[in-house]
Length: 85
Image (tube, rainbow, N blue to C red; front, side, top):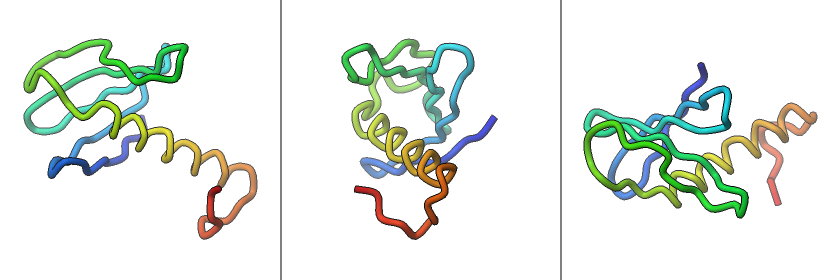
């Protein structure tokens, strides 16, 4: 299970991809949520397990998109220094 860190609104969150279902666990010391992108490309909360009722879902979702776009570009043969357009 690969995780990466997202820093937004003065908070740090760990993000981990869940299989099956293409959802993501988002957590830190004070909260745990599961989010998923819907059919329209909008990030939504699927489950709130504990902690704060709301998290910056859009910002975290954007960071997930960027992270996986970069991984996909690297696996396609682009160097880590290549600019993504």
